[in-house]
Every structure is written in C-alpha cells, then in structure tokens.
Length: 252
Image (cartoon, rainbow, N blue to C red; front, side):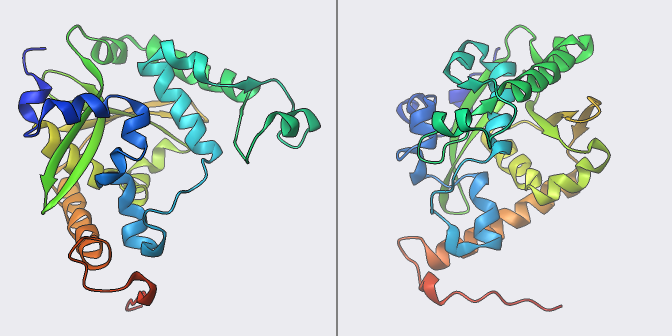
C-alpha cells in the first residue's frame, strides 16, 4: 500500500504500535481514549460509562468471525466445547467467573459464514487484495478529546468494516441502532478515506456491500458531538456535573 497509515494519524508511532496489541487496545492503556463503543452508553446510559460489562454471546461470536476473516492464526486462542447447550453440567464445569465459551455448533455456523464470504470472488478480491492492511489502529483528537479506532481492513481507497447481521434487509436500521454511523464518521476522520460495510446475514447467508452517504456521516458526526458533550460534562478532567445526579430528560 502506498499510503502509510502512520502518516495519516497525527500522533506518535509509539501509541499506534502499542494499540496494535489487543491487550493494550482493549485494556487499561486503551481506556484512556474514547471510542465508538462508548457512544451507546454516553448517549443512552451515561452512568454505565467506564463500567466493565460482561462479554455476551453475540460479542464472542463477532470476535470469532472477525478473527477468522482477518487473523485466522489467532483462532487457536478460542476455547470451543462440544455440548448441546450452556445448561449442561460439562459446560458449567468448564466455565470460570461467568465467562462464555463458544459451542462447537456455533463455531461451525460461524465457519460457514466465513466460507460464504470468502468464497465470493468479488468480495474475496477486494478484502484480500495485495497491499491491504488488517486490524489497523488509529488515534486522533476529535472535538477536543482523544479517540481511538481499529480498522478491519485498509485499502488504497477506503476503509472496510466487516459485519454480521440478523436480518440484512434491516441493516440500514441496525446501523443507527448500533452506531455504525458514528463509527463511519470517526473512521473517515482517522484514515482520511471513506468507509464501506461488507455484511453477511447470519440466517440467510446473503451478502451485502454498503457505502456511506453524506447524510449518514453527518448523522454519525451529530452523535459524536452529543457524546462529547456528555463526556465533557460528567467525565472529563474539567467536568462540571456529578454523574450521580444525572437525569434523562426527553420530550415525548
């Protein structure tokens, strides 16, 4: 790839190199930065901002799918158990501290999703084109605060984010629900190029490619502005209000 990601990001290489490590990106070091995953709580449940949340089945499956697509050499790190359900004695005895383990049948379903996306030649040629970069971190100062992100794939011309969805016919609505619009805004800021979503339906295995319109990006920018206002008000070093006194107010 001719463009260096580090030239796009106006911050030192030490930060970027450290954030390439998942333990640092998702751990204590990475928590000094805001990210798109913070948007939901800042806008909906501010009192939960910064509060550790348990990993869900959907999060585990999403993580496995991304790893299989982008970093298959890391799949050995996933524990898989061949039982009928999570209510079995064998499963419960295998878990520690409420962790979730991937079931063999779930793994096989996810592997089929990966195969379907990779078997499509049009998509394969784009995702795995020579020069593409995978799992690329970035940081930037946006609206006065430091934000981080990690792109699934960087191509010469755009950023690709791969998604699974429960109903691809409703993906445009899922984008708003799960704040993919704010993600698109942030990632365009980070990497100086547009973002595209490559999507697969978990039920029908239908594939989709979605570009981001200016209105979609503008909606994402508005969310980042609103989240920034909440963060500055309740959590920044210059905070002016106590989060314990927060009251949600809305006109119905």
